[in-house]
Length: 163
Length: 163
Image 1 (cartoon, helix red, strand yellow):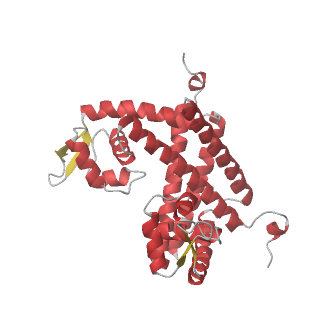
Image 2 (cartoon, helix red, strand yellow):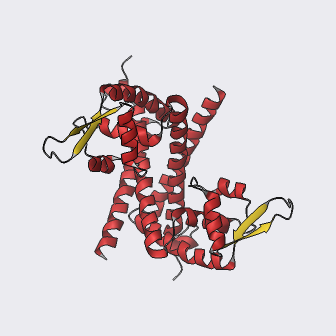
Image 3 (cartoon, chains in turn brown, yellow):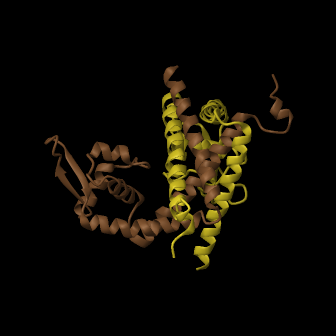
C-alpha cells in the first residue's frame, strides 16, 4: 500500500525518524565535543571527571560506586578509574558506609566542591552561549518535545520487553 | 541587577540552557545505547562498524581514510582499526586513488553493500519505533528547532574564534 504522505510530498515516518535521530545525535556530538575541548584547555580536565564531580555535587551525602555509575548520565568509561584519580587528587573522599560497613561511599572533598563550583559556573556560561540564539520560550518548547521523545523511546522499550 | 524573568517565575537563560543541554544529551545517550545493544545482539556488530559502512554507502566512489574520518558523524574511536577489520571481513575494499597514486580509497564491497542494506533496514525500523509516538509534523518541528540549535552553536563557535 503506497504511503499517502509520500504522495503528498512528505517522507515516510521511518525516514523522518532517521533524519531526526541523525540530527539529534549530531547536535549532541558537536556540543559535547566543544565542552570536552574547553574543559581540557581551560581546566586541564576531562568530561568523565567533570561528570563524576557533577553527580557527587548533586548527592551531598555521597554515593557508592554502584550508585555513582547509575547517576552518571553520560557514563561509560571506567568510573572506578576516574574516581581513583579524583581521590588521588584530593577532589573526592572515601568513607565506609554507615549502614553497610562492607561498602564505601565517595563524596566531594572541600577542595573538590570549590573546584567544581568554579568549573560549573564557567561550563554553564559555555552552554548558555551555545544556546544564546534561542529564547527562554523556545528552549522551553524544545525541552517539552524532548520529554515527549524520551517518553516515546520508553514506550518502545516497553514494547520490546513485552514482546 | 535581578533578572526580571526570574522574578516572573522562569529560570534564567543559562539555567534553562543547561537543562536543555542535559536533556538533549540524555535523549541522544539513551537512543544510542539502545542501538548499540541491538546491533550487538542482532548483528554481532558495533556502532563504529555500522557508522563506517553507512558513510561508505553514502559515498559510492569511495573515500580516503581522511575523508572517512571527516564523514563520520559519530566518529571518535579508531577509524583505521575499524576499517582494517572491515577489510579483513571482506565488507570493504581498498584501492589506490586514481588521481593520487600515493593514497588509498576504501569503498563497500558487494558483500558489504548487501550486509549493510539488511542492517540499515532493520536499524531504520528500530529508530522509527523509538519515535513512534511523534507525528511527522512533530518530527518536522523538532528538526527545525534542532537546526536552529545547530546554528546557534555555530554562531557561538564563530564568536569564540573571533575573540
